[in-house]
Amino acid sequence: MESSLAETDPQIEGIIGREEQRQAIVLEMIPSENYASRAVIQAVGSVLTNKYAEGYPGARYYQGNEIVDEAENLARDRAVELFHFDHANVQPHSGTQANMAVYLSLLQPGETVLGMQLDAGGHLTHGHKVNASGKLYNFVSYGVDRETEMIDYDGMLTLAKEHRPKLIVVGATAYPRQINFERAREIADEVEAVLMADMAHISGLIAGGAHPSPAGHAQVVTTSTHKTLRGPRGGMVLSDSKYARRVDRGVFPGSQGGPMMHVIAGKAVMLKEAASPRFQQYARQTVKNAGVLAETLEESGLRLVSGGTETHLVLVDVTPLGVLGKVAATTLESAGIVTNYNTIPFDVQPPTIGSGVRMGTPALTTRGMRDQEMRTIGHLIVRALQSHDDEGELTRIRGEVRELCEAFPAPGLLQQ
Ligand code: DSN
Image (tube, rainbow, N blue to C red; front, side):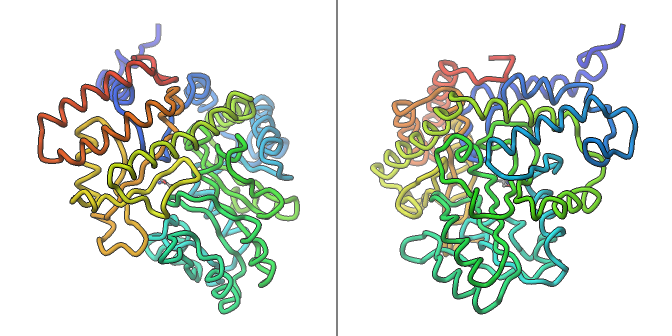
């Protein structure tokens, strides 16, 4: 009989077990993380990992793909139906790969793109100078208004008229407000640019009807699949039919080789789950939970960037409590609350310290937590930050966090 993982590699088996245990007993509040269902994890852990399938269904460079073709077709069809686009490419290995494939499809090196500034909440692949996007293309950054800390669409229009970009990218990783896709498309049309929406953070909210959709506005949309969507780690591109062939060529052979068929099967499962009425409730509760959490934190003296949230995410300026971002995030982790430190708009601190903490409710909501738990968690966060040098109190909070987690077991985990 073939050896089990425990027999073959007890070290890795132990690491997986300990990580599973960690995920069970902490409050997972990194807004880009979630718990995939056992069904998704089963698909990803399947023998589909063995298959090479370069190409697309019906047009592969390897034999023996009739069966995995069915999985990819299911994933593509479900993505098209869920997000109301003409075409879906489900092969990108990540959101970053999806973004790079679109740039490769639509741009020549050196061409101009408008993207959101990293310290205003944008993503590395939206033209940061250390990333290939910023090295290969001429990215010009728009940001947020200094007063409202919300996207400055007038400023975007001014920059668009001045720089005449080929592509405008909207979407963010640390922005708590809704994205106005309609307004962004008007700006793109005004300068004859294509509009790309990177909906990675909010795709689950869009699928569940809890955030306006980019359909009908953006011509090309990218997303990762493991955030609010609760799928396996990966990416996806949706587009109007006009861009379908170019996008497909940008993914393969442009920027990737063989697709990960096991992950594509996991994406198909996730897309089926995300089309259910239960998922709609989940998406709405995720946003509601973020609102309750934000309110609780604000009442306790923390400052909310942009004054609130309309999504799954809360960006908190922690300096009113006398701490900086990195200390705050480390303190929260000691208390069993996992977040990440972040810069805030116009931050005077470098990204390695930050004045803020980014937190979100997707994973908590997946556990079934609601308004009352959000208030409890908000109070635990403030208590922890106020006790950042009191180990005894942080240990007590960690115990309360564990009790809360035990009352709301996370799906997908075997050890609870
Ligand atoms: N790194 C992701 C996030 O945490 O927002 C974005 O890709």
